[in-house]
Picture 1 (tube, rainbow over the protein chains, first blue to last red):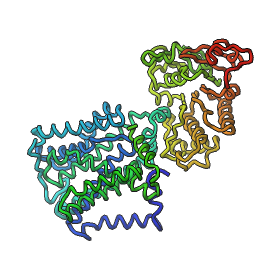
Picture 2 (picture 1 turned 90 degrees about the horizontal axis):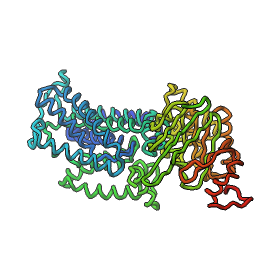
Picture 3 (picture 1 turned 180 degrees about the horizontal axis):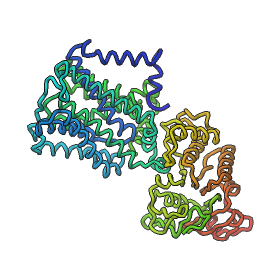
Picture 4 (picture 1 turned 90 degrees about the vertical axis):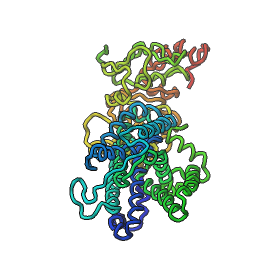
Amino acid sequence: MSGSAPVLDRLPGDRRYWFLALGVLLLAWPFLFGSFWARIGLGALMWIGLAQSWNMIGGYAGYLDFGHGAYFGIGGFAAGIAMVQFGYPFVVGFALAIVVAAVLAYLVAVPTLRLTGAYFAIATWALAESIKQAALILEITGGTFGLSLPRSPDTFIGIAVPFAISETFFYYVMLLLCAATMLVTYVLFERHEFGYRVKALRDDQDAAESLGIDTTRVKRQVYVLSCVVAAVFGSVYAWYIVFIHPNDILAPIVTDRMVIMALLGGLGTLTGPIFGGLLVFLLQRLSSVFLGSSTFYLPLIGTLIMITVLFAPSGIIGILRGEIGRDDVRKNLKELGEKFDLL
Amino acid sequence: MSDGDTILKTTDLTKRFGALTANDEISLAVERGEIRGIIGPNGSGKTTFFNTVTGFYEPDGGSVHFNGEEVTGWEPHRLARRGLGRTFQIVSPFKNMTVRQNMLAVQTDDGRSREEKRERVGEILEFLEIDHIADNEARGMSGGQQKLLELGRVLMLDPELVMLDEPAAGVNPALEERIMDHIHELNDEGTTFVVIEHDMHVMKTLADTVSVFDSGRHIAQGDFEEVSQNEDVRKAYLGGTTAEDDEVPV
């Protein structure tokens, strides 16, 4: 079977109880562990969601998108501009983020998705870099000064909330977004025929076309969807973090992290980005908290990537399934190269 | 443009790659319900012809008519949904999906419900005798089973015309027999076939009419016996040898 079912099948007992226990733990998290861990939790949830958004185009469709982080920044700036420059409430900024990301992603998809492999990666990387440079010089984005967003302490969509907008509030917003992203991925990519068509074009585009699949259309749909998801997270992040700057939310490291998380977890799987996202995010946070250096985790991640690419190209999910081709490094590299059309 | 019984017609179809003319003004008509074989030495333009007809290559000249409609330059998926199915020389199952998912990935315009589609998958897998591996990943299948899966996927299109590129290549004799039986059975039900095949035994038992390609040109057409005695065909295959007992190589 494809996807993550075999991993989930290995859980002892009734799977429903595991999901129920996980759900209860996630819902009670801020109250059980306090605001510091709520902040850690919301960060982890956001990165899991972002890794999943990259996994849609990178893992399921096999397009190595190195400009994906730009949509996170676009979402953040769309919300920020709506709130700061036009004085709208966050919900308008949120809607604007979706619309701007969808329109831009479609316009970008038309020329760039004609490219494959390294060419697509370079084109998207260049696009992200140009968007960042534009944000640094435009007045509406605050230029090199960035944007400071207002925070309405006690209302959401104009309705009073029972508790102040705090880490706890944003934790639940991220939990909702992350759960929605997982649900959309599960339904669309693992259960629906749409997902089979996406995987078909990744495995063999000509064969997919010969079977009635309009591969151009399917690729554009996946790309737009994945970019919109990244923008949604970006808009909420901007609202949460209050101050946004192009050098932060449009930095290449945003994309790099998504790629690394999906790759380490398991490309083109539902649960891979959860494992990869948690691992990378926690390594980063723990190295920052306990070792006083937020970059110490980078060489560690580099080593992990090398090990993954050489010995376990299916990532953590592959290891859990027992697919470790220790003796077959060449085959592993070839498989990964084929997945992204790099050979 | 098309005769009543002609399902596929190409007129002066030309495809060039730089200085090389891979298909040189190929005119060919396939009648509804027939099994047409295409033979020719390596590099004679058979697969290029398939690719140009099915929309993978833009032709440099000429036209393609399918079911009386001009379809020159149509995108492959559009032709597939119209009922023109094809397979490839190198088998290409979607290896990270199960056999059933491979079949369900096929997209048609026939308005079938999800249940009807799943039912059809079951019927085809049963017909091809691979229903017992429906939930196995395609990557674990044997080469022969992959050939059958490829044929099964094409059948999901409910095609009127199927173009098979070397369906018997690399399969054992028993499976080769099975594939030929399936083709005959489908042909009896009304599906037209155009088949590229190097195995002359297969061609002899399968094809009603054989078209011979050489250096990008359509040099001969007729039943198997006729073309195997044709002087131009012998030259194409044997480089001019005309020994009485020589047959087109098997």
